Image (cartoon, rainbow, N blue to C red; front, side):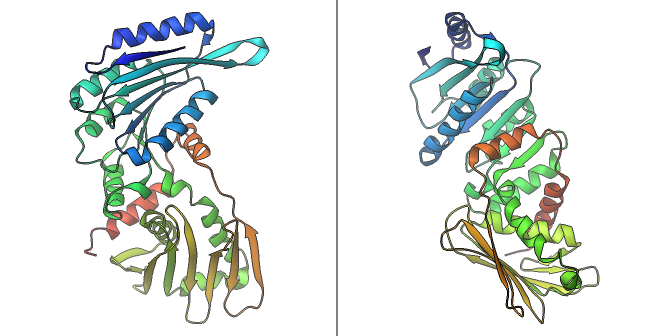
Amino acid sequence: METDLSTETIDVAKIEEKLKEGRAAEGATTATTMNLIVYIDDRSQHERALRRAEDFCEKYPARVVIVDATRKGPGKAESCTRPFAEGTTINAERIELQVSGLQAEIVSSSVNALRIGDIPDVLWWTSRQMSEHDLFHQMIPLVDVLIVDSSGLDGAPNGLCEVAAFAQRSHSLLLRDLAYMRLSPWQDMVAQFFDDEYFLSDLERIESIEIASGSAAEAYYLVGWLASRLGWQPCDRSTLCDSSGRKIRIDFKHRGELRRVIRVALSTAKRTFAADLSESADTVCLSVSDQRHKRCTPLHHIDNLSLLEKAFLFNSKDDVFEDALRVLCDLFKFEA
């Protein structure tokens, strides 16, 4: 059941009434698991974010509130049902608020009133701006989990620095960055090099890191992850240092599609360990420069819906992610 709603002023009572009518018409059991709030202010990202929100609404009994700052005019309230166990049905709800031109106070107050109490609140912030955005600061106290994708932030890595600084200030909020989360297959690939005890001592001899990627966020996150795992600290914007002061050079190359890593290479004075994406983009080939053998293995891409599910279903802090962020925050203190 779908009804148009005027958002010149957000009439929360009218929205709630329409959703109540929808639940009555469908005869579904309401068992809402979370409030998912999606903020969109970029038309180029609108359809992508909207599709992911719709996919989520179809899969989970959640109240999804889409805050669309790209449009002004009628919004929508929708109740949708799906089969559940033992012949029962459950209800999911989606509210679209078209808020272009509305003050941040009006928007945040309305979203707050539309939340269902005593369940988790998740904010998926798709905007390219955070720290300078009034609505962002007003929404943060309302939610338990913040999801961003720093691949799309303006001026990365400066945008990524916003994420790192924000994470240090917010101790109770769970922060998830899709740019970091999509790197788990690459982290596994790199770790595989040193499963062989013959190469394990090379970790202490690495002199340079080369990462080629289509966006800066993934490259920086890989550096932060490696440094945090190996006990390295930034000593300037392009160099890491180990505990003895030995320097490890960082070499970033911009190549490939957005959100896509192309190559990760770790070099010592004697050999280079490289993981390279194949031309078909479905396998990664692992090689060691002084070894003849090259091993290719499937790259298990993580689709966006699965990333989102993981982001809000994993309900504790990710210590490895936070360690990587701390490294990056220190790295960004140096001038580029």
